[in-house]
Length: 506
Image (cartoon, rainbow, N blue to C red; front, top):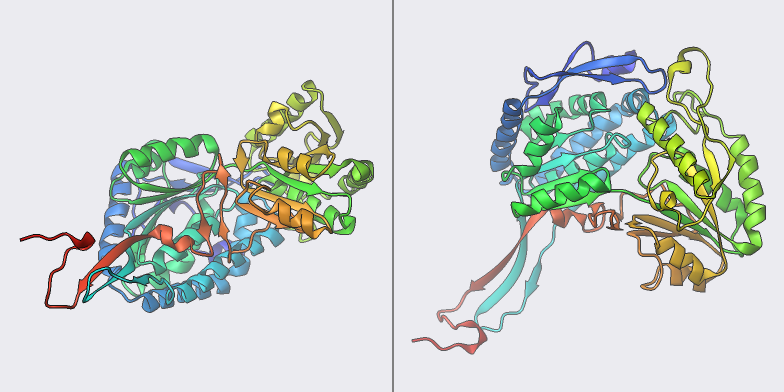
């Protein structure tokens, strides 16, 4: 396929990049097209020794890069953003080919990579510290931010490029190097993206700033988490694994950014504009086949409009097109693999056993031709109770639970009554209800929206959540501070040496 050639992907691939592609010697990893089930590529994974080579190269690159002025780092990131912009179409098609989200969403993901690069360019001149008054005459105090070191980035399959960009573009303008371990389900996406940006870095002799290691958990993931040469680990994945990562990184006094599960609720009050509600629910619940961490999982409907919205949703779900994600008119492509299909089936069985009602959907979608071997499912709409264990858990599939609420207090209580705390939304015409929902007594999520859905966060805001979601923040706002070390400076410009707190000595 032309887009593969454009991205330098042909034949078997190396699983390690350290300024140059290494000759890896580990086990072979096959990657499949989730739309057809066919094997589309092989990557020879890195061994523990090859992982060490990548980290050593990243460390060496950091020692040179940290001295580069911030605006020059920003210029390097600008060039990487332009390189991604030139290959936006090919990169998007690669995401769809290997991961399965609709090509429209895939192009949107690449645009996120470009946008965060643009954001980081501006940030390169704005990593501001503070000046502070000193209690001692002839002194001043200031706060400065310094490069941190080599940042380990572990990403998930559902956003195989954007999450790397959120972390790496910020890390690089902060003066850090990076080592990336992508999901084993989407290795070609990582290889293709590195091939796009590496000419920019290699031209400056800094290719190792963007290290890549594809390998087993034992050889790479665990080694990275335990590696004291990496002061910061950014992990995106399940809550279960996130807790393990947090504990191991903390045990060596490292820092972690955790982006784990979501169980996102959309509240619909009795005064909501239903013409806005329906498309927000559909995109949030069905986009990426329900495999976004911000996917809408629960819809909390006011009693007075419950039946109307339910009926509208049942009709809308019957019109959802499931099919080839390369078709720009298709909203719902395949799940990532057969295990995900089974997880969805298990969830529907569990909710039915608990007393829930499947209103429509569920089961495999029967497609023809090359798509017959794909991981396609029919999005499911289910009536359930918030207290059901399966509703409390996150199912990474297009399963949407409908529940009744009586008033705003009931809505907030149910929205908050899950272990996760990533994204939330309310649809209402009441400014009082909107403001209460996003107040200290409202949603407990890292993201709380008004009259837009739970999914589709912009890069300008810090992205992340609370509780079992992990508490980390990536992308916009002041998330850059996580990639730097804070330093307090006291400067004495006098000829005296007074001590703090008025202490007299000698």
